[in-house]
Amino acid sequence: MLKKLALASAILTMVAGTAAAETVKLGLQPWLGYGPLWVAEEKGFFEKRGVDVDLTNFNWDQDMIAALASDNLHVIAGATNGVIASFNQGVDQKGFLIMDLAFEADAIIAGKDIKTIADLKGKKVAFESGSTSDLLINYALKQNGMSIEDIEHVPMGASEAGLALVSGRVDVAVSYEPYISAALAQSPDNTVLYTAAEKPGLISDMLTAKGDWIKDNPEAVKGLILAWNDSIEFIRANPQEGMQMIATAVGSKMDKFEPAFEGVRLYNIAEMKEFLDGDFQATIQEIGEIMQAANPDQIKKIPTPEDILDMDVLMSISN
Image 1 (cartoon, rainbow, N blue to C red):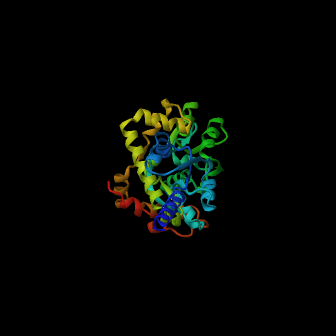
Image 2 (cartoon, one colour):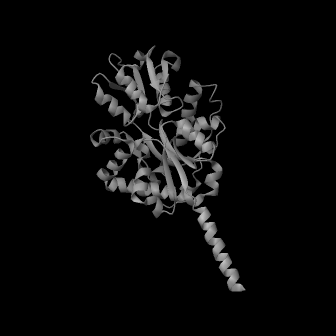
Image 3 (cartoon, rainbow, N blue to C red):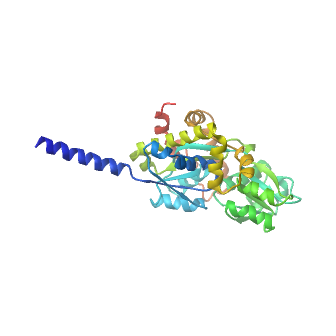
């Protein structure tokens, strides 16, 4: 009888273990800062860390957030400003891993005869609402004594914005790599007017999930963090191979990808912890203030770091 009970217990344990190993459905966009996720998939780092991950590409932030809110995705790669917007929409979305900071890899690119931010007055500017591009244009305008009311906003995704500039349908595009390099390569008249390097930390990305999912799946969260860290170390040790994997994933040729890649910084676990102990939490406040000033009807409350971060698993991992 005892042997039968022991066998039943073992079977139940195996079933529970199988249930716990549910496939993590992870949404992301073709942004080079998310590149280590594709590297982790290709090099088997997710499997190595005991987590089964299904990566799904999206073109629009709102589609990913809707999928997260409806439980069609467990995890999404998203910008910090997007998480602040979700908080104000009543969507439970918390960051558990800091992936990257953008510098020159997020930019405002302009056509002929536009040389300064002041020149944007009355011009058609293409960018995606609620995205990092939205944050960047609002910050640039604010720093130059202007507001979103001074331009004509043309709603458009990052991939389409550069093409619209090249075709002459808009005067300015706000986008990110590899679309910036592609737009610059297609016309000598297009130039970089302003980049996220003007405010380090303004544009950052995190892996995010619902708060309850993070609490209920600590091993999956840990596996994702460790697999990400494995990818960062692999890319640093094998830059050409790592960059080629990411370039292929985002649909960019290497000659354009390599300079674009220099405009973003990817974080390993130790660097994430250092960033969390530094200016990141104050930057969250500043990002919220910029968003609220630009869209007071939508951003009614600036969240505290505790409202949008759950870094307990990250902080528990030994460097």
